[in-house]
Length: 456
Image (cartoon, rainbow, N blue to C red; front, side, top):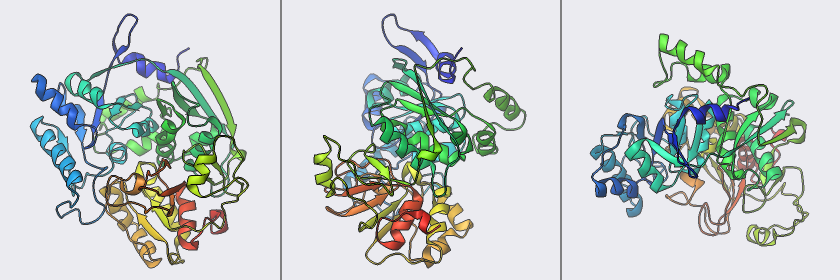
């Protein structure tokens, strides 16, 4: 009668503190430059080493510029954070994929693509979108800097066990509807707090039909519903994706691993604390209209007149009843740990092929890793994109958040494939509309918010 979450969680329990939290063993810790410096300082202050350094991987991503990465970083704060991570990794004997390293990229893109994130694991990082790794069938969640220190020192963490929720999406996705649209749809239905206190298992026909990259996108956005994390039971799609990855088991160890991974599913009679079911017929390409990811509509719908959204609409310059189709766009951003993978670039290229970037639109196309950048060129997608007037930038978090050079100016409207549209998220005063790579591509070549189904 156990859920998959119970199985993974319970198998990692070291001890349960009476009337307190659970001491949970962690299989993989990812460290980036923003949330780790104080954690390493804490180790130094106590004279501690990392307990299991071989299970810890470090790489900069938030502050990395997406151009001229071979030159010194101009921004002093970004340069200090990235240099500090490199020094900490060297001092504590940790694997570090620095800038220009072929293994560098956004940590939540690199982990799965290298086979560092595997089914049945517990995975943490000082970053809320660690839920991305749940796509491989792992229990993955973001933690705070003091907790990063805890894992560095002990490879364990103290946590209260979340409740379990299963979200089932049945049916078949329509034309132009992607995993990103499924996630935006779920956020609009549950709101940004509807899954607070829960760990979400995604199930159903639609989820099973998603590629691994689509699953990574869906799990990435679990946190935006308030969930502690989200994950999908591993299946043949998972195994095919992970096979021959650099850190995946090999040979006989692979066969043994797959044998175990096949047991990682919720029992037929498992009881969840909450169950929700949706149908694919309800989902069309989607966009957001407000200042949190739950304020979203189908691309052909009109902005609702909801109480309490007045401030958000004023910030965005929108009003109830407005249809966003035809709204002028200033910037388009393809990338982030949400949509910076090779499939996202294929989707974008499929729309812009044979077209030209709209005059007046600034487009930032940012691969999630050097491996993605390499594959873009191997598949000739760079030629399609360049012929249409687009340039490929270097890997990094880029315009997902205003911690590097890629900032959207105040007042400008950006159609973004990232995960958050908070006030000023992409730059002070910037306005963000979250969307899929298909919707972003349609906006990039028309200069206005456009239903991508018209161009497919």
